[in-house]
Amino acid sequence: MAAQSNISTQSYINHHLSDMTVGSGFWTFNAGAFGVALILGVVFVLSFMYAGRKATTGVPGKFQCFVEMIVEFVNGSVKEMFHVRNKLIAPIALTVFMWIFLMNLMKLVPVDWMPTLFGVVGLMLNPDAIAHYDTTGYSYLERVMAHPWSYLTIAPTTDINITLGLALGVFLLIIGYSVYFKGVGGFIKELSFTPFNHWLFVPFNLILELVTLVSKPISLGLRLFGNLYAGEVVFILIALVGLWQLPLHFAWAVFHILVIVLQAFLFMMLTLVYLSMAAEKH
Amino acid sequence: MDINATLIGQTIAFAVFVLFTMKFVWPPLINAIEERQKKIADGLAASERATQDLDKARAQADEELKAAKVKAAALIDQAKKRAAKLVEEETQRGHVEREKIIASGYAEVEAERTRVREELRKQVAILAIAGAEKIIEREVDAQKQSDIVEKLVAEL
Image 1 (cartoon, rainbow over the protein chains, first blue to last red):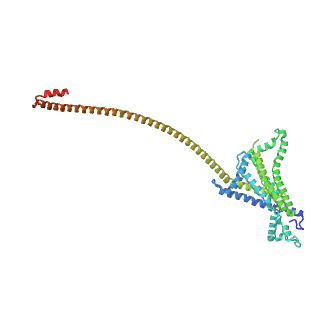
Image 2 (tube, one colour):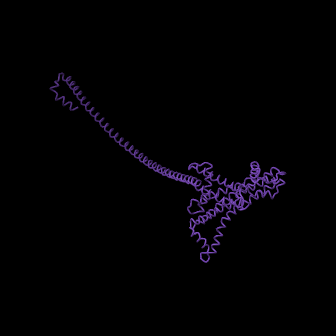
């Protein structure tokens, strides 16, 4: 792609790192990342629900085995980390793990495929979108890449909104679990009287604990975003090096298989840790 | 890439997916898994029990076999003794029978001899009388001289 003389390296990278958007101002939706995230979430719940419907207690099929392996793995992690009885915690862990895993998995799709496909389709279905653009003197590919649909991002976890959105969900769950298991008073008391159990230290404790509380989801969201975004940038840079991108892309993709699973696992485990900390009385 | 409404949308989607998973995805899967685990545990326990039963049955069979062997040995022993005793008895009885037969044979022979001797005596007496008749040339009245004949017979 970078061989096109009119597309500079910088605009190529910028093109890949932005997303197709809907709306304006704060009420902008990153349609590519969010749309793919929703589709993957639906794929996850429907396929697992299908497996659940078909589940037999006898000899399981191959898909059921696969699903049950994941469920068993998540269930084991939940049992290990979370010692209070709660029927919401395991579904949270499963959703987090599978959804993030699928979203991370989208990174293995070569970076130019979907933008090109959506640009071509956009140019066919919605040519007016680049009417303001002086189309004379530009190649077809350049016009495709100028189309707003071609900005689509298909790896949702390389979008900070997606990862922070998940982290915000976890943050709300932390507060919800704290209040549910300790009561509002108990939660405030814990914030005020740890780590120093003396009323003189209450303001200090409050500042410390609130920072801790807020830093949990932020670190959670930024960790996932940082890992995946950095990987994505490397994929884009690899796509710039001409023919050598084929072996390099393969090597980096193989390495990324590890990152994909590991980051999904980490997010799930940290969610469990935070929620079990919120649920357990100290 | 700025922070925008996608974040809120993602949070809402997350909540929806979690609730959906809790309602429709997790329970059937975990139930199936747990039920199967229970089934497998039951099956293993049953096989364990069956193995124990088998061992017990084997031990019992061994014991019974041993007991039967001992009993059989005792029976054979008894039968042997009995046979020996029977042979002994029969032999004894045979001896007695033989003695008896021999004794009766002797008695018979003795009786025969007595009878024959008696006969001979009579014959000799008749001969003697005939001889005497010849000698004295006259008929001896056997009736009248019977005392003489009796005497003669007794002397023989």
